[in-house]
Length: 339
Image 1 (cartoon, rainbow, N blue to C red):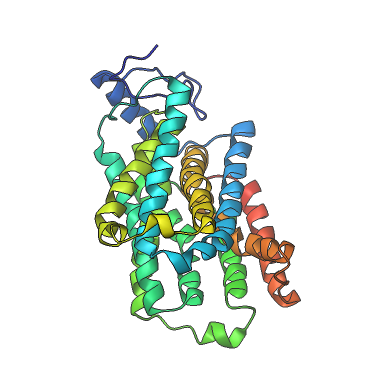
Image 2: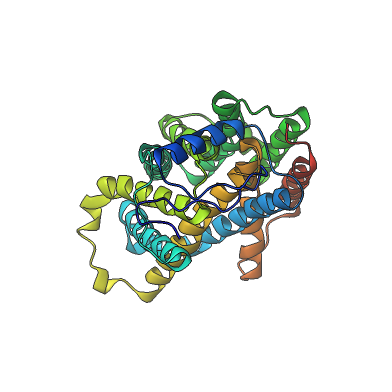
């Protein structure tokens, strides 16, 4: 049984064979840091690799659902307040998960600055996204978003020396092209008319922050249990967003919010925040950074399916073709060697 001042550690590591000790001493933390460095370019195989890809797939499906559900809350709540509330609830959810798993109150992790950095990267992404949307349009931000997996591949090499193979890189480029085709509704003139303005430049900074998360999770992980690591990351992101959104939050009349808003907040907090943070952390410990966030390219594809299933209409065949190209390119990427 762990003492109250020890971090929750993984019982076994999915990548290497030796069991990870459940120690929270200075020696244990140093050992965890050494393991993190040695595993930076070592990836899971077999069953664990498949689970990593399934986590990425689930990530894309959940994010796609958040677009349709989050749209319901948008007219009633400012973006800053919505993000602050969703992360407060997500942190409470992950606290409950940790209490259920470990039967004790979580302690502060060793080197908490790790989570401040990861949380800060995600907070920058969310804040710049909404700032950009006030300046430019969703199509333009969606086009910038497609750069995230490619940026993540570059940061994976810079931070971890993860090498992206030619097949994986080609698959990412084809998947990005398919995603852009979908985002611009299959209109070549709209694609050619894309211009980089102030909003796109601001959101690009946020996308770099988002792209940094996958390699940083692998770099900073010291053997902590996935649920505990997610709790620390979500809590750190919550703190940053509360600092940025406290002004909007204090003006919210919570009693006047309609039930559909709380339904949307619940989905965003539990699934699109706590759930996706865990899935990204889980996949990042098993797959190279270039593959983890590439599943985000499937988000437009899943949005098409969800909107069609809800009776909101189906897109044109040419747009669906772009979505299928993305799906096929990511299938090739999934089966390609990791490096």
